[in-house]
Amino acid sequence: MIKLQGKLPRNIAVAVSGGVDSMAALDFLKRSHNVTVLHFHHGTGHADQAHAFVTKYCRKHDLSYQTDNLHGDTIPPGRSREDYWREKRYKFLEKCGDIPVITCHHLDDCVETWLFSSLHGNPKIIPYRRHNIIRPFRMTRKRDFELWAHVHNVPYLIDPSNADTGFRRNYIRHEMMPHALEVNPGIHKMISKKVKEDEVTS
Image (cartoon, rainbow, N blue to C red):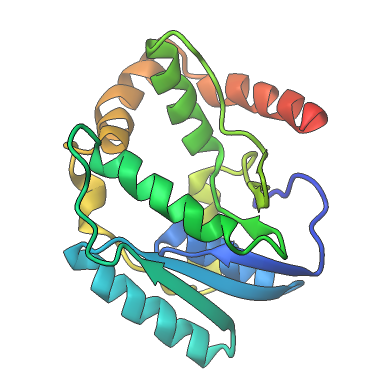
Protein backbone atom coordinates (compact mmCIF):
# COMPACT_ATOMS: atom_id res chain seq x y z
CA MET A 1 0.00 0.00 0.00
CA ILE A 2 1.32 3.44 -0.93
CA LYS A 3 1.63 5.64 2.17
CA LEU A 4 2.06 9.40 2.35
CA GLN A 5 3.92 11.20 5.12
CA GLY A 6 2.61 14.65 5.82
CA LYS A 7 -0.04 16.68 4.03
CA LEU A 8 0.69 17.90 0.50
CA PRO A 9 -0.75 21.07 -1.03
CA ARG A 10 -3.03 20.92 -4.04
CA ASN A 11 -0.39 22.17 -6.50
CA ILE A 12 2.82 20.16 -6.65
CA ALA A 13 5.61 19.17 -9.01
CA VAL A 14 6.76 15.56 -9.28
CA ALA A 15 10.25 14.43 -10.31
CA VAL A 16 9.74 11.68 -12.89
CA SER A 17 12.43 9.49 -14.45
CA GLY A 18 10.14 7.12 -16.34
CA GLY A 19 10.92 4.17 -14.04
CA VAL A 20 8.32 2.22 -12.10
CA ASP A 21 8.77 4.14 -8.83
CA SER A 22 8.24 7.62 -10.23
CA MET A 23 5.55 6.60 -12.71
CA ALA A 24 3.52 4.88 -9.98
CA ALA A 25 4.00 7.89 -7.69
CA LEU A 26 2.91 10.23 -10.49
CA ASP A 27 -0.21 8.18 -11.19
CA PHE A 28 -1.01 8.07 -7.47
CA LEU A 29 -0.57 11.82 -6.98
CA LYS A 30 -2.27 13.11 -10.11
CA ARG A 31 -5.54 11.57 -8.95
CA SER A 32 -5.87 14.15 -6.16
CA HIS A 33 -3.41 16.95 -6.99
CA ASN A 34 -2.60 19.40 -9.75
CA VAL A 35 0.72 18.04 -10.97
CA THR A 36 3.61 19.48 -12.97
CA VAL A 37 6.11 16.86 -14.16
CA LEU A 38 9.85 17.54 -13.86
CA HIS A 39 12.23 15.38 -15.89
CA PHE A 40 16.03 15.53 -15.96
CA HIS A 41 17.96 14.19 -18.96
CA HIS A 42 21.27 12.67 -17.80
CA GLY A 43 22.83 12.43 -21.25
CA THR A 44 23.13 8.63 -21.27
CA GLY A 45 21.92 6.33 -24.05
CA HIS A 46 18.82 5.36 -22.10
CA ALA A 47 18.09 9.00 -21.28
CA ASP A 48 16.85 9.77 -24.81
CA GLN A 49 14.31 6.95 -24.56
CA ALA A 50 13.22 8.05 -21.08
CA HIS A 51 12.83 11.66 -22.21
CA ALA A 52 10.65 10.65 -25.17
CA PHE A 53 8.60 8.30 -22.97
CA VAL A 54 7.89 10.89 -20.25
CA THR A 55 7.12 13.59 -22.83
CA LYS A 56 4.63 11.33 -24.62
CA TYR A 57 2.97 10.36 -21.33
CA CYS A 58 2.57 14.00 -20.27
CA ARG A 59 1.05 14.98 -23.60
CA LYS A 60 -1.35 12.06 -23.48
CA HIS A 61 -2.52 12.95 -19.97
CA ASP A 62 -2.42 16.72 -20.49
CA LEU A 63 0.18 17.29 -17.76
CA SER A 64 2.43 20.34 -17.51
CA TYR A 65 6.03 19.38 -18.13
CA GLN A 66 9.47 20.88 -17.54
CA THR A 67 12.85 19.38 -18.40
CA ASP A 68 16.57 20.11 -18.21
CA ASN A 69 19.75 18.27 -19.15
CA LEU A 70 23.50 18.21 -18.61
CA HIS A 71 24.13 20.41 -21.68
CA GLY A 72 27.13 18.31 -22.74
CA ASP A 73 28.85 18.72 -19.38
CA THR A 74 32.11 16.88 -18.72
CA ILE A 75 32.30 15.26 -15.30
CA PRO A 76 35.08 16.95 -13.32
CA PRO A 77 38.14 14.84 -12.39
CA GLY A 78 37.68 13.00 -9.12
CA ARG A 79 33.88 13.16 -9.21
CA SER A 80 31.76 10.04 -9.62
CA ARG A 81 29.06 10.08 -12.27
CA GLU A 82 26.41 9.43 -9.64
CA ASP A 83 27.43 12.33 -7.42
CA TYR A 84 27.74 14.75 -10.33
CA TRP A 85 24.38 13.74 -11.83
CA ARG A 86 22.73 14.03 -8.41
CA GLU A 87 24.12 17.54 -7.91
CA LYS A 88 22.89 18.73 -11.31
CA ARG A 89 19.51 17.04 -10.88
CA TYR A 90 18.91 18.72 -7.52
CA LYS A 91 19.89 22.12 -8.90
CA PHE A 92 17.18 21.65 -11.52
CA LEU A 93 14.57 20.59 -8.96
CA GLU A 94 15.46 23.42 -6.60
CA LYS A 95 14.91 25.98 -9.37
CA CYS A 96 11.20 25.14 -9.17
CA GLY A 97 10.97 26.65 -5.71
CA ASP A 98 7.54 28.23 -6.12
CA ILE A 99 5.78 24.90 -5.44
CA PRO A 100 6.86 21.76 -3.54
CA VAL A 101 8.75 19.20 -5.60
CA ILE A 102 7.92 15.58 -4.76
CA THR A 103 10.45 12.81 -5.25
CA CYS A 104 9.57 9.12 -4.97
CA HIS A 105 12.33 8.04 -2.59
CA HIS A 106 10.92 5.02 -0.75
CA LEU A 107 11.71 2.86 2.26
CA ASP A 108 14.07 0.60 0.30
CA ASP A 109 16.07 3.71 -0.67
CA CYS A 110 16.22 4.73 2.98
CA VAL A 111 17.54 1.31 4.00
CA GLU A 112 20.22 1.35 1.29
CA THR A 113 21.27 4.90 2.19
CA TRP A 114 21.48 4.01 5.88
CA LEU A 115 23.56 0.91 5.09
CA PHE A 116 26.00 2.80 2.86
CA SER A 117 26.37 5.78 5.21
CA SER A 118 26.91 3.43 8.18
CA LEU A 119 29.92 1.93 6.42
CA HIS A 120 31.37 5.45 6.29
CA GLY A 121 30.81 6.02 10.00
CA ASN A 122 27.85 8.38 9.68
CA PRO A 123 24.58 6.41 9.56
CA LYS A 124 21.72 8.51 8.19
CA ILE A 125 18.44 8.22 6.40
CA ILE A 126 17.10 10.26 3.52
CA PRO A 127 15.51 13.38 5.07
CA TYR A 128 11.86 14.24 4.59
CA ARG A 129 12.64 17.70 3.23
CA ARG A 130 15.46 19.43 1.39
CA HIS A 131 14.58 23.06 0.68
CA ASN A 132 11.53 22.87 -1.62
CA ILE A 133 11.95 19.11 -2.19
CA ILE A 134 9.72 16.75 -0.22
CA ARG A 135 10.00 12.97 0.05
CA PRO A 136 6.60 11.80 1.32
CA PHE A 137 6.92 8.13 0.26
CA ARG A 138 9.65 7.05 2.68
CA MET A 139 7.26 4.64 4.44
CA THR A 140 6.36 2.92 1.16
CA ARG A 141 8.19 -0.17 -0.11
CA LYS A 142 9.33 -0.38 -3.71
CA ARG A 143 7.19 -3.48 -4.15
CA ASP A 144 4.10 -1.35 -3.38
CA PHE A 145 4.94 0.98 -6.25
CA GLU A 146 5.37 -2.06 -8.50
CA LEU A 147 2.01 -3.44 -7.35
CA TRP A 148 0.30 -0.08 -7.98
CA ALA A 149 1.73 0.06 -11.50
CA HIS A 150 0.53 -3.49 -12.18
CA VAL A 151 -3.00 -3.00 -10.79
CA HIS A 152 -3.54 0.37 -12.49
CA ASN A 153 -1.77 -0.47 -15.76
CA VAL A 154 0.76 2.33 -15.33
CA PRO A 155 3.37 2.27 -18.10
CA TYR A 156 7.05 2.58 -17.20
CA LEU A 157 10.53 1.94 -18.51
CA ILE A 158 13.28 -0.30 -17.18
CA ASP A 159 16.67 1.41 -17.22
CA PRO A 160 19.27 -1.25 -18.15
CA SER A 161 21.88 0.63 -16.10
CA ASN A 162 19.97 -0.39 -12.95
CA ALA A 163 21.67 -3.78 -13.23
CA ASP A 164 25.17 -2.30 -13.57
CA THR A 165 26.96 -2.85 -10.26
CA GLY A 166 29.64 -0.43 -11.38
CA PHE A 167 27.27 2.18 -9.98
CA ARG A 168 27.58 2.38 -6.21
CA ARG A 169 23.82 2.36 -5.52
CA ASN A 170 23.39 -0.76 -7.66
CA TYR A 171 26.26 -2.53 -5.91
CA ILE A 172 24.61 -1.86 -2.55
CA ARG A 173 21.20 -2.97 -3.84
CA HIS A 174 22.23 -6.13 -5.65
CA GLU A 175 25.34 -7.28 -3.77
CA MET A 176 25.11 -5.96 -0.22
CA MET A 177 21.39 -5.90 0.59
CA PRO A 178 20.89 -9.69 0.34
CA HIS A 179 23.62 -10.15 2.98
CA ALA A 180 22.21 -7.37 5.17
CA LEU A 181 18.78 -9.08 5.07
CA GLU A 182 20.40 -12.39 5.98
CA VAL A 183 21.88 -10.78 9.10
CA ASN A 184 18.80 -8.67 9.93
CA PRO A 185 15.58 -9.68 8.12
CA GLY A 186 13.77 -6.88 9.95
CA ILE A 187 16.00 -4.08 8.71
CA HIS A 188 13.14 -2.36 6.84
CA LYS A 189 11.05 -2.28 10.03
CA MET A 190 14.02 -0.89 11.95
CA ILE A 191 14.62 1.91 9.43
CA SER A 192 10.88 2.70 9.19
CA LYS A 193 10.99 3.59 12.90
CA LYS A 194 13.83 6.02 12.23
CA VAL A 195 11.84 7.49 9.33
CA LYS A 196 8.85 8.09 11.64
CA GLU A 197 11.08 9.79 14.18
CA ASP A 198 12.53 12.01 11.45
CA GLU A 199 9.04 12.98 10.28
CA VAL A 200 8.29 14.40 13.72
CA THR A 201 11.43 16.54 13.74
CA SER A 202 11.41 17.61 10.03
